[in-house]
Length: 64
Image 1 (cartoon, rainbow, N blue to C red):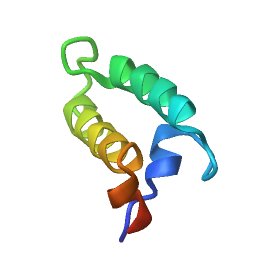
Image 2 (cartoon, rainbow, N blue to C red):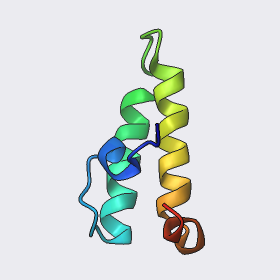
Image 3 (cartoon, rainbow, N blue to C red):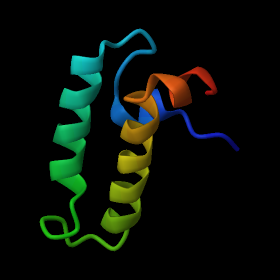
Image 4 (cartoon, helix red, strand yellow):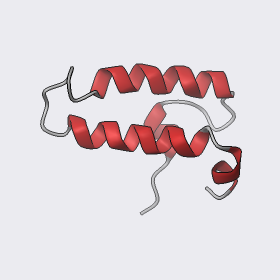
């Protein structure tokens, strides 16, 4: 099943790069393993990083 990176970051499909960046930073702080001791925090943090990597790169973004 393909992940919805927009949903993961909590932004709309027509979000600007600045909105994506802001949402990423907020989620990254929330789920960073050094700050969040929940068992699934590290996995969630990796998913958030992957989502930002794809959505911030226009070449990768086209493929989703």
